[in-house]
Length: 149
Image (cartoon, helix red, strand yellow):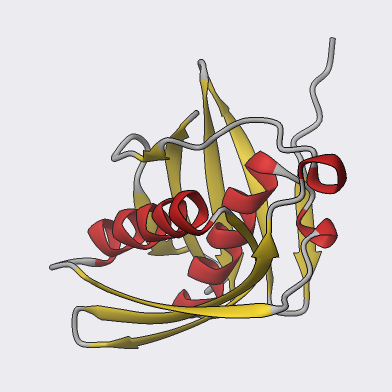
């Protein structure tokens, strides 16, 4: 059986899932580091539901600090997991801004509607497994890690 890797592409970049035993890898790809982090956020949402089904109606601000880009990615994704759980929301649009070792983000989304969003799994958190934030040979930024489901 051939398994297709879910993927989405936009002008701002793309996201995809990659297989990892019982968990799921999320990868954001973009022309800038911020776009790659935004796409990683979309990939996280896509683990749970189809991002296109989530209306960007309510804005939530987040700030994360970490000594390097990889740890900042984990903190960013875990901040999204926290906001999803505590606010009972899903997010479908993101803006990211970096300053020094800080990330300032706004995520837009809406409250979860079980019948419409049909959440597939609950993401418990981002891990350090296969954690990487780097530019590839074409200059694209790739931000990835495995999330525990």
